[in-house]
Length: 81
Image (cartoon, rainbow, N blue to C red):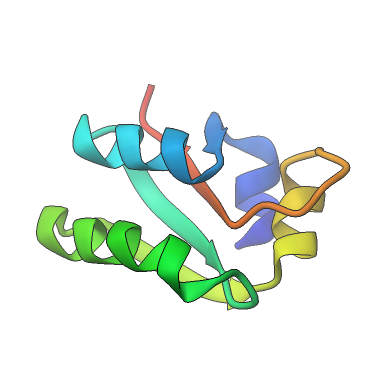
């Protein structure tokens, strides 16, 4: 699954992922298992409402590395665009 994130068109960060979900562009949303729940909870609820698939089994460091950034990422999404 991370390999797919590495090679796909993506957005990184909770604000950008939230925009993508709201606009119907997010195909898969990745949420870090070690990120603060108060940060991710609104995004998790939005994904349920929009029926967007959520993958929550990677750490912030793993998501950051898959997105080719040097810091951890709390959220990332593969987008249709």
